[in-house]
Image (tube, rainbow, N blue to C red; front, side):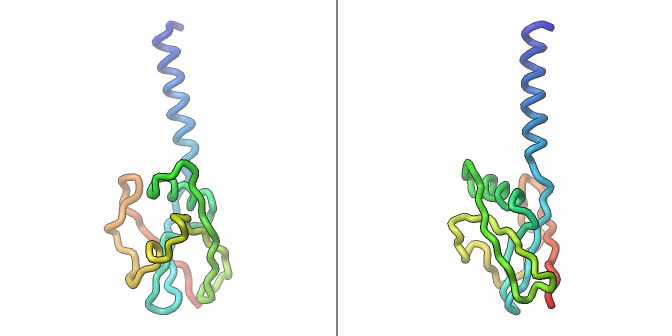
Length: 114
């Protein structure tokens, strides 16, 4: 194998590892209380941390947990940190399909309310 092939193989391995690090992203939101929408929320810490890294341009993403009285499952949901700025993740309207993540339109799913 010549040096050119070795470089190509290393580049291929690097890109392959990078792709393996990207989690499957399930974007969620909840209305809690009525008329107040919280998003993005994620099922896993990995998703929320990755979102924080990409959207908020931090080297190591972080997140925090929320539970909602209106959530019929009682699940702990993960929200990207961004200094826990409630104004950034609390909204007066549902998410629409105008938001993008990694050049893909986000299709939010609603968390079931009681």
